[in-house]
Image (cartoon, rainbow, N blue to C red; front, side):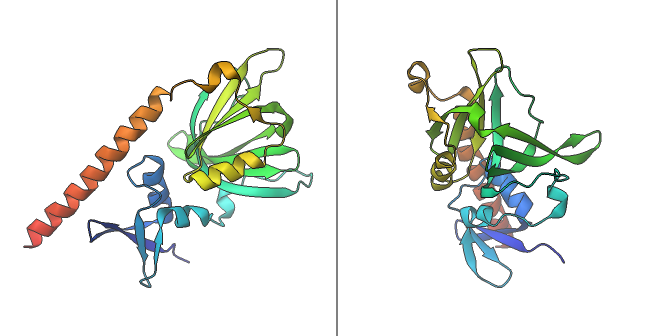
Length: 217
């Protein structure tokens, strides 16, 4: 069964079509925002945020399950923005990842480069090791315990919508507010670059639409 395709509405013009993975990739790169309108093949309209919520039911996205049973409490689409500091080795995920809050662990699964191709990967982080959480709009900073060290490893996830980010943090029972010394820290340089990427990416997309319109006339 072929994946559905969507057109993106930009300045009243339809651009595309694109499949879900491409649209989510553009959202991760901030070429599109969560509020951009999509038009499906049947004419129905939704937003990028709505599409992100519809997580793919693709077995290739799921690494082999462990033998133990674990209750899934919540599942969110996300992307890994940054990992800073020593701590558990996280796979170098590319693009969209699936974050599952289970009864004892946070399971992150996605795809990563493997030679000239791709492979599936996952990591399980004990919920009790997630000591701190901080919201920054659609971004969530997690402070992870480092074994034998008083420091923290910081994992930053993009949850695509502020509502999803808030809900996600509420599922982390051991996470306390960020330490006072870090609470007022300015956004990371990367977040500034993402902001500029949003402006530049949208401007380029709109420019392409205008070129198409002028060419037709």
